[in-house]
Amino acid sequence: MSDTPPLSQAVHNTTTRHAIFMVATLNAVAGAAETVRGWCEDVANLVRSVGTRAPEQNLSCVCAFGSSAWDALFGAPRPAALHPFREFGSGERVAVATPGDILLHIRADSMDLCFELATLLRNGLGDAVTVVDEIHGFRYFDRRAIIGFVDGTENPEGREAADFTVIGDEDAEFAGGSYVLVQKYLHDMTGWNALTVENQEGIIGRHKLSNVELGDDVKPSWSHSSLTTLEENGEEVKIVRDNMPFGRPGSGEFGTYFIGYARSPAPIEQMLENMFVGRPAGNYDRLLDYSRAVTGCLFFVPSADLLESLASREPAASEAAVAPSAAGAAA
Ligand code: HEM
Image (tube, rainbow, N blue to C red; front, side, top):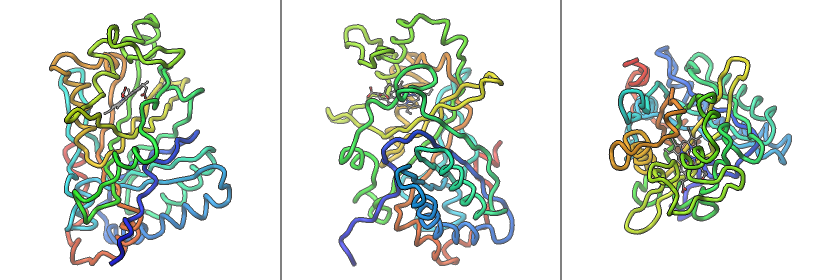
């Protein structure tokens, strides 16, 4: 056996100007599992086919699977920390769980490449899936979220990004993989824009124009940046985000597609608990007074090597009938 670690998918690639996020559920039709397994082998080839036509546009694609889909498609063994999305919060403020079996996160510096690859990948899945959500995100000025603040500043980079996102010895069979959590947020821009810039800065924890972090003496404990900062044994635990603005001004829709990668779902879930429930409980993220999560899914990202080899998983190991995702069945 070779000692070379498995090649990861493009989980911590440089951020791009455009992205397509596609979430699909498996259909309970004959041959669906075989179609998806066969498709796994084609993903990297299709990325190459489209990306090579314009290498300067940095096309990439991450392909990931939800908990019940993993069992239905690939059976045992399964990634150690993969489970259905856990909801956080209550009442007006809930991180909701919604159906999702397969995630495609397609990125490039121009939309035509994203669009072409999304078309090819979706066509390859045929009637094995139903696409339940598709968002076309765009980079907004100097990497600002639609609420006007620069988004992504505290992301780890390079080696650090890999350390925080890529599974190692803790789940050796799935080394080179990652977990990814997505949520679609809609913003109340009228309410948000009615706040003073100073109030908005307190909510985010950074200055709006300059993007400089507020000092500890003035940054509220309920600011977004405070509640999403985690420490374990004195060390900061980070995740890699590549959120994208999206929307339809004509329909009054203004959104943020949140996407977070990590080597375990735990830190992302802890951040959600801090935001929605509060740290301590009640001291919640005031960004949520102006933002509502309307989707929520957790997926496992196989390494690039594993993705390709999933095509030849023994059918005996995945005899389970294809069933809609648990969240879908409950909805
Ligand atoms: C409504 C959707 C969201 C918006 C508009 C948003 C926007 C922002 C902005 C503007 C920042 C400050 C700059 C930076 O990126 O470092 C930030 C930081 C951060 N956000 Fe979010 N975010 C959203 C949701 C989330 C969620 C759901 C999570 C995690 C579950 C999260 C995790 C983080 C983390 C870890 C930081 C860096 C904190 C630090 O180290 O200072 N964000 N976000």
